[in-house]
Length: 192
Image 1 (spheres, rainbow, N blue to C red):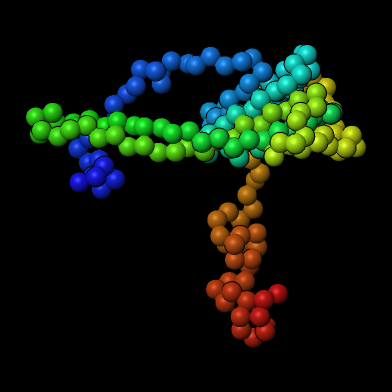
Image 2 (image 1 turned 90 degrees about the vertical axis):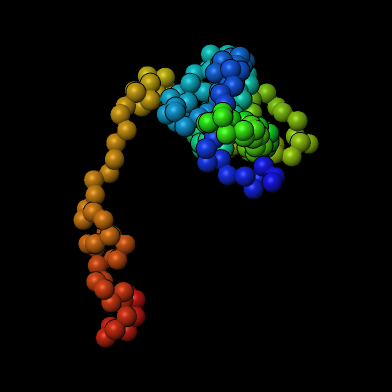
């Protein structure tokens, strides 16, 4: 039976010691993940560029890819003259599973999966324009610079949610649009 057909019921994942250690990365590289606030990442990225760094690299994998794109777009709209180079990455990850009951005579199973990643380089210096994924700086009228104090207050501010009016699916603002169960069909001649 191939490893793709085997069920992992009765198995547990083997922890790898090298995954637990934090890997060193350059000071101008920000690893974006689901644990960090996007506001903090934006603030840190802009602070790096304003402190003299000429190039910044934003990296994320899996579900963090969207956050990398969003953070890069905000930073480009706050710092003038940023060239952008976007590159897709693919990482092969092999997980190993061992039987929970060692007396059952089962062998370890290895499963390989691929995780997509995104790397966006933002630079105040011109990048190689012939590479796919290059974007020139935004026009200066589309960039709104923000002072450091205001950015720090914004990054430290608690996340707010908008008050709900009606809640759930009912009410005028809900999914039904206040039309009741008829969904707009009937004597009125269709949707409003």
